[in-house]
Image 1 (tube, rainbow, N blue to C red):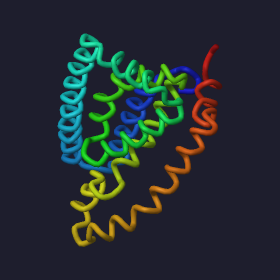
Image 2 (image 1 turned 135 degrees about the vertical axis):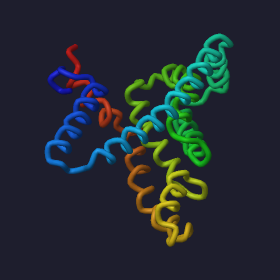
Image 3 (image 1 turned 180 degrees about the vertical axis):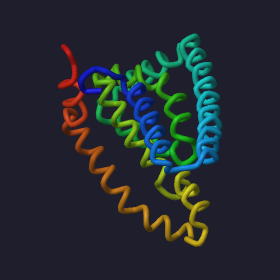
Length: 198
């Protein structure tokens, strides 16, 4: 990626093919394992494609109705400072993370909220980094963090209350990181700028 040979998506595909070939050469897994992996990958990919399809339709609706511009104008009319707008968005995404799956949440909300973020003067790359962190917080924080229930299905012998207590340390670091990103945006922007040809 750093040399410009592959995009991130292409690099992921090359890495997956390399891992598959290495496993076959070392006989690390049987053909049945490969078939199972392909079946699971197809199922997950189909789910993601359906989410992307639905969000694309919603994005078209947002553009045609002018919803994003209406949101920007409404927030601008209130006169909130940029930091207050970002804090509201952070709280909004953490709340959504209790109930929605991460990819769907991002694909549905970003077409509406990105113009608002740009209107406050924040960098879209910085917002993307912040958004990933906030979505991950939403997926693990009590009371309804979806990833907690995924863990629960894998370890049913552990109570939800124990999981809630166990996840608390993992919530502290992301909140500290969010505070640092709000104070020093270059934490998220230095690497993309260093890789830019401009």
